[in-house]
Image (cartoon, rainbow, N blue to C red; front, side, top):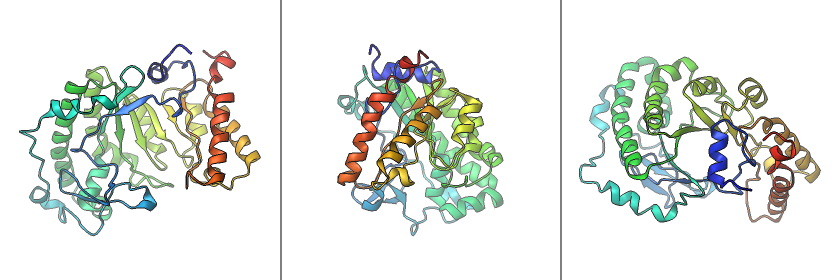
Amino acid sequence: MTLTPKENYLRMLNREIPEYVPSNYDPYRNMVSEELLTPQSAPEGIYISSFGVEYVGCESMNMGAMPNPNKILCPDITQWDRYIIKPDVSDRDWEGYYKAQEGNWDRENRVLTVGGADYWLTAVSFLGMQNTVLAMYEEPQALKDMLEYVSEFYIEVLKQQIYYTHPDILSMMDDDASYLNPFFSLEMYREFFKPLQQKHIDIAHENGMLVTRHDCGRCEPFVGDWIEMDVRAWGPAQITNDLKGIKAKYGNMIAIDGGWDSQGELGRGDVPIPKLRDALAEYVDTLAPGGGFVFGAHLGGNRKDPAVMERNQIIRDFYEDYVRNYYRDRQEA
């Protein structure tokens, strides 16, 4: 191997055949931490965001941060400006905040990533899900005004991150779909959220960055628009999406980062080992050809369970034996 995990991953994002199939076994990214943006976890059980939203976490959800449904920050979208106040960052030591993180980054071997642009999740955190959906129908202009106001702050944070950290990747995250369907139509995505996310993408492109997207659930109606926006990868790409159809239609235009059935039988410790091996081969042979693929097979649940540990080791061995050199062995490079 001659390419670092960073170089290999960037080659894939540039729609070339990578030297080897990227995976988390060769970590290829570091993330800039930013307390001003939407929290990903609430490790102490409760976390108050910079906008004043109370997030809660619990062990059954691996302490992932979820807005407290019993504490709505903005009860009336028509009066959003009474409740939604941008954080005062006039005295913030931006340079010092990011410099303190530099020891956690491996700039030679891993891409440096910044996040943000989660406008659907932001609205839900302020209003609650039901009120957000109602606002999209009943008070669309008020919702747009609120999101535009928040966007001014999010864009300021992004610009500071770029100035002080010089990241490689903008990784947008907005979980706007359930496991079976999006929470709103493609037309509504284009009306409310896409224009704001496009602002982030434009700034990223102006600074030589590539763009990836995290979106759980069945969000496939939006994939075509993401490609139009030049989003280069999408994860976790859950299997309720038509991944075969997406791969056939778009090839390596948007890399599938994941695409494994981690929530079904294949993600449990009692999956029969022969079935697991067969599924792994089908998974890779479906999504790897032509590039645009990050291997993401794994079992969830209790990682210390002997059955889970055994199967995760089988998955890792399969990656090393069959997947890592997939392109070299098939002379695709």
